[in-house]
Image (tube, rainbow, N blue to C red):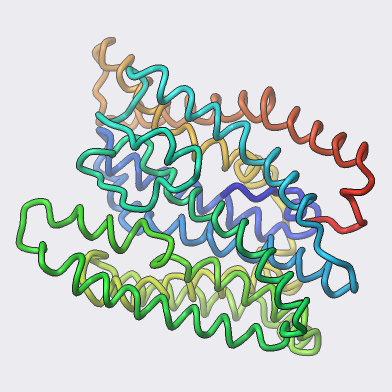
Length: 383
């Protein structure tokens, strides 16, 4: 979610389309699941929880592909530069959102927050109990991405140092398989004993949906695609004419995943459905970066703009929906009407646009200034 769209909208329009789809899907899912809504919202948003998985695949691909390109040029990864860029891209809007949640209780969409230190250390997703910490729960995905940003460059630096990069494929396979095994253990020991309880659903979220150790499939899928395209140029060239076929295959896998995950809290969905979803989105991403695909060939202002707002929109949409619907309720509006949906959605986009303009863009300019001012931090690679 927090990855920059600069590369995408300069060269890869397809990734802008996918990012815009992802934030729209997640937005509809949260709108239908937490707020009064028209009936038609649920009919198109049931699978919307997977929009976060698409964000994970995109993040894994974009970050890893640029790190791999640095390695491919024979240059060392600058750990300091990497985190300076991530800091200025992620922290300002995130910290502002945290401040609003903790200082203005009336803005909260639910009753309680996790402890402040969990948000500040990006560990809120670990042990998250929706029964007592349901407010700003969507920060869980940002926590996973931040943990990923911390570990990925360290792992790559280690693999390069010990000349093990070519064997990194086995590490990816191991992590994929470990994820399946961990979810099986979490199901049997953390979820199954409580399935007959009224609050059994909370244990599923706590042990299977939110933890980093059970949700790495999407990020690993993105890293795998980046590795394939960077280190297997012949295979990448062979795939280029088949972009639309990859997208079609991804759609077919997602249809199958939709059937398997009709109830995502089942054992089959939790163990097999998660990697199916990520495989489907992985094929979409692979197709979207192939020059032959319809997603690659044409950029649209609307999808580019929605993609550029996706991070702040994700951070703030629950606050804005809560405030907007509260105000409309005072005016006597029917909160389940399509008109309320339209006004609430426009309010979310307006707030995201304002924050993107007055907060994100200035900090991105400051980031560039910092990097230009400290040449030692900029060894000619762009992560």
